[in-house]
Picture 1 (cartoon, rainbow, N blue to C red):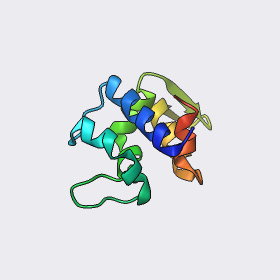
Picture 2 (cartoon, helix red, strand yellow):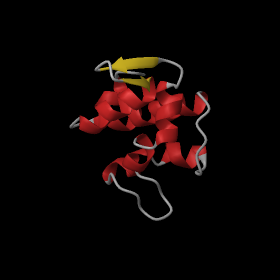
Picture 3 (cartoon, one colour):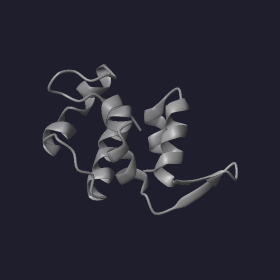
Picture 4 (cartoon, rainbow, N blue to C red):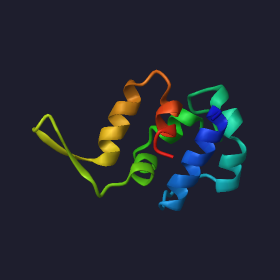
Length: 100
């Protein structure tokens, strides 16, 4: 699957799960390709880093319900664990693809 399609499907999944964001949904989905051209925020138009690494997106995408023991010292929500892992990935968009 191409990165544009992965990002589009990830956004759709998060929206379906109740993700609230400050951008027009149709505009956001329409501009997925443009968003991938530059990872960082550009005035008036969010780029994919500012989308996929936001806590609100991660909570909606992975969910808060499931708790995971990590190194037997912390109990974390699934979204926290997966977001931490995604930050370490060379291709974070491909990491999202695993959960679509």
